Length: 381
Ligand SMILES: [Mn+2]
Image (cartoon, rainbow, N blue to C red; front, side):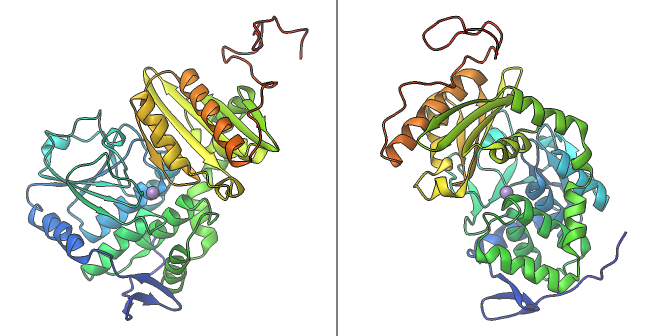
């Protein structure tokens, strides 16, 4: 239900403004104009906005903003849409198709994705003309037309810049999508930069939206989603962790909700966590670290990129939140993450790599497992 009238921003010297908030002008305005003119030129032949696998709130929000700006585009996601992404789409009554036929379009805008494996089985060389619009720092996996702006905490901010550049007004769906995307991608502001706060301030001033309503839309149902609760509890049951000085590295496995599981493990006491989601021969890993770990000079995006290279997958992301997509076995990849992170933390903390891995046990889980010396476990624990 629409409660808020569309509004135009004012133009300041460095960006668009509403109230005390602002959205900076695009860092590459000419490139952004090239995307806009392509979306207009391909209007008759079909334009697809494509979000990544398990499309998150930021990817979905970006697609929604582009749909409100260019109503003729279709929205799609590779393989699946996250639960929170679906809540946002349902709340705004906007459709997004899973696995749309890319070849039916003449232009594809790939959003919020740092590598081809996030939107395809890897080979996109036969795809129609495409652009990548993203805010992740590393784009070495793409070749071709790209608009990237890693200064923004969320891709929705880039989409809103594009909307304003065309002269579009910000309507309620765009306002909600922008706030939701920023809230989600900054870990509820935990990792937000000043620009992300400025944009939220602008949208709140301009729209009069209540933060509570946006939070309710993206997390309301989710709080009660039974499969999410079960995924979190299973992640706790399958946890494996090691200690380096006072820091804890934890790993676990789920089949979905890996981001929620990672959050649960951080709250439970992990300082760095790796969660694998393994389905058939497909593997995703979510890595998260607390801010004090980042201050040691750990960058999970670089770390996962390295793990990706070593396992023939594609990894990358932000310093405190990163991931890996591809193929392989969860156990061995998690073991690799654990071993490398333990070594890295020992180096950063200037302590020995712990010799006694007290907390280590093989994954094929609990009962009858062996400790690292191959001994039967003593008794029940
Ligand atoms: Mn994002």
